[in-house]
Image (cartoon, rainbow, N blue to C red; front, side, top):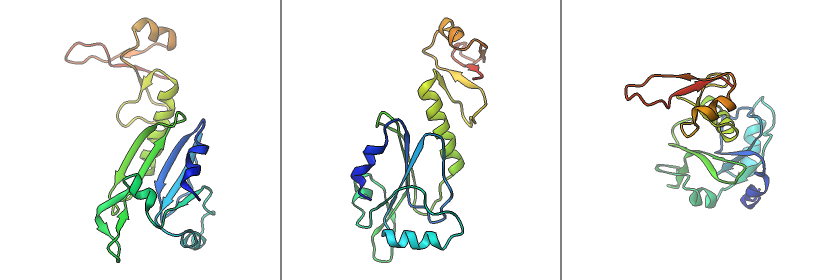
Length: 182
């Protein structure tokens, strides 16, 4: 698939772009369009997928066997090389928002696998914080308390969050650590 088609599908969705997973997981998430970039040829990817007991790959794959897109996006691992001396593609994750702006970029070395639970958690956070005036704290999971953004006054926060919010004391005495349930 040509990578020029990439921009055509991101209207109204978060777009998650990964380098190829050889241990493909079924990967669906609300309002997320998934694309894979692979330095392998399409027939190798299809052949590999048919060897697995899981479903066929349910999303587009960008065949980048010449590594043009990988070079353009800085997806090559400078330390790891294949048998021909070519740099391996790093394990990259890019999340592009509906506004066509990069929201997240994670680069793992070619020798390190990704943490899909963390990627999904981040997508949940990006989707939530794009529509609400909140931020998600460390290790946040959907359903847990979120932080009211500091730029929101207490008066505005009370209007937006009728259930209220809890102020956490900090040594500086500043009152910006406000938590609420959505």
